[in-house]
Amino acid sequence: MNSGVDFMTKSTADDALSSKASACQLKYFNDPFVSTMLTKSHGALMKAERRRQPIINRGYFARIETIRVQLSKFMQKFKEGPIQIISFGCGFDTMSLNMLHELQIQGRESTENETNNTNTNTNTNYNNDITFYEVDFMDVVRNKERYLRSEDLFMNVLYPNESDREELSVFNEWTTLDDVDGSSSVAAGSSGSSGGMIHCTLGSKKNYKLIGCDLRKSKNVKKVLLDAGINPNIPCAIISECTLVYIKSKHSSLLLRDIASIFNTNTPNMWLSYDMTHSNDTYGRVMLRNLTNAGYKVPSFTDLPTIDLHKKLFETAGWGEPVKYVPIDDLDADAVDGFDKIEVPITAIEEGDGSESDCENDDKNNNTIHITVPTGTPTATPTATASPVSHVASFGSVSCITMLEAWNKLIDNNDKIRVSKLEIFDEIEEWNMLMSHYCLITALRNVRFD
Image 1 (cartoon, one colour):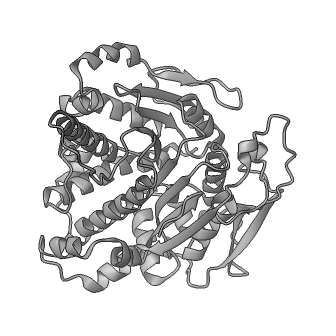
Image 2 (cartoon, helix red, strand yellow; image 1 turned 90 degrees about the vertical axis):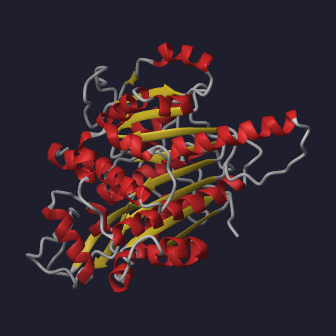
Image 3 (spheres, helix red, strand yellow; image 1 turned 90 degrees about the horizontal axis):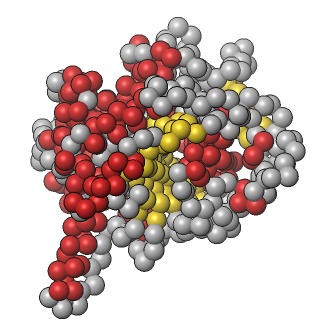
């Protein structure tokens, strides 16, 4: 793997933290933890010195709020039981701290109601038994763990009772695991390699797991999640917030398949993904050139230049309507057999503009990009140990809309009126263009939204 490219991808943890802190400071949304997390990262602090334009602040609000709205819908379906949340590319995000903090407040209110013999039936947003699995590069999650342990504000959420702090010594060390392919695992304390896997458990109920693993190694990701305690029978929401764009679509497809194969056929799942799209129009080419010039590599931005291709990526990886049994255990990201090639017109992409595709089989003469995605009947022979949970779910649906549509349909009008008063905003045309170049995928299995 290219260490320079990986370094820039890892730096997006600081980019997102500093931008969210900017929007939070201006009251776009409430987050009691983001400003403190900002002080822990020198890189994020440096980036926070640059004032964000109103369009960026509003964009981050839209990004956070649409994910919150969809996640709340899923969690409302399963309020009476436990739930799991996986965050891929978690960076230094504080959503998990916010949700655990809100649960503590709800728990205290419930206890007070019982003490006062008050019979209430509150319609809370979140479940009372949530386990978080946050996954990112090992360097990133090691830093995040260090930030969490160094601040009482964070530890009071992870260990709300003083007696629980006694457990801290038990979880002081990271658990280091072997690669699926049998190669040597990384040594404890190292910054890690692309294939290594490592995880740390925090929280008084072991309800918060930090996992270091390269998302391009999907089998490793699957193994470390299982070793960290993911339950195939418990409803699970998966979030990839501007994450899949940094890896090739063939790796995303295998990740989607391997994660789907963790869960039993009747387990409710949701995958929310916020991604860039429409790379082959004029505005998209400018975005791509700016990102490339800044040192960022976003292969899936060019791999998946349309909404339909984003949707097809999820559908062909077991997150769409019911399809055949897919034994994914032996699938290889570099294998050709069992994969179909999608031809995408690239007539709008011009040479020399910095928007060169990262796809491996570009055919400029035929004006097409060849994208490799798994089919429903790979030629790989299933092994004897193939798990029956590799079947696709009994019900599935995938929706993919632009963030402009998400802004119009998912965000409450009162919130839109409120944020419109926070800053002078006269970038309406650019706002419409920017939001049309990001999309929100909601992939559901065994659950329906109204």
